[in-house]
Image (cartoon, rainbow, N blue to C red):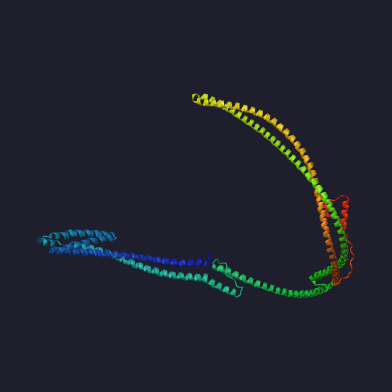
Length: 628
């Protein structure tokens, strides 16, 4: 794997990890040597303490000897106390020495020294001191104090001290060696760290700084517009490769931008050409529009003066031709319409005169109709009163027939209910008969069960006597139930036969009542038809009377309307003359007077003729008056 394909973070991590590893190794070696020096220094302190203890032992022994000699010579009690105090100090020093030393030979020497001191104290010192308590024996006691044993003790102590000094010298040598190695490790570690730092700096400069500087220069050239540069390092997999890929994208985008700018410039030129063409077309359209507006203005001016014969002869350009065609068509249609209006105005004038004459004739005939209608109304009032009285009598007869019909129908309904009740009684009897059969069957089954229970009780012997008594009672009860059921069944059969006879008699009665109801219904229908016919006649005559009265009122109203129509016809004639004068202001091609219209038939005359014909043929109906 190439170092160029490693990311910046990993490169920096590996570089600093190497420096840290060298530093840690150097520091670890130095730390180990410092630990050796510290241990030796701590052991030297112990050795020095042991030397002091050995010297304390030697000094205490000497002090004991001096105190013993003084006590033997003078018998001074203070010297005895001094002796005991130094003895205690010697024993404590021996204990400390044996406890502090870690060398087995030194421990053995300490034990031997302790034994020698104890022997010396007992034989060479304490014995003469005990002897010296007698003043006469002091010289003998002084003679026993010998320094030979003390010399042996001194040699043992010197041996202990010498051994401790040798150990101390060895430790000092070890400390010096450790210090030398620590300095060497410090120097070597510093040199290796500096060398590794320079190597890492060179490697990082070669793999990071120089490519970044080259990429910066490449980006400056791209920013200056030099798109011909070659982007290197795209094959790398680190951040430089990513930057190279991004710069390549910038380069491609710049090239594409130039292409787009060229295309945009081409499109701009095409748009300018298109705008020029559109301006030319717009100017031409404005000229054509001005010509169309001028021609249309001439046509509208002619129309405002009433000249309907004006046409736009010169053709319009392009899409405006449809406007010219529509204008000419509109003028032609307007001219034709005005021709019809002029002709109709003349017809209205002549028709208004005819309406005036017809209105005068209608007024006279209306007066005659009013007189005849008054006489007809009086006769119809008498006929209407007679027919109404006949209709009232027929209505009373109809009411009596309806009451009879209702009574017969009520009797028939009662008979029907009786028949239905008898049928229900018959059905109930059948159901009771079925229930009695079920009870009989239950009694039979109960009898069988009681018989079986008695048999089982007999088999059980004395234990089943009580159960046998109960079974016999149940059997007797079942037999009585069966006999009662048979008696009830016989009674129900007798009742059913009698009910059947009653149903038959009630049915015959119902059929007779149905025939009576039917005949009463026929009578009621006939009476209803008579009453209805009389009522219809009375109603028809009433309607005729009302119609005649309405005709009288209408005739009076017609007289007033005829007068109004006459005045309106005169006014219409005057307005028709004014309309003809206005139509004369329009200029029309081939204008002529319209053909005279045929006079319409007088509707009043037609209605009178139809009424006379209906009266003559006896076809007058209520609806005919409404049509009139």
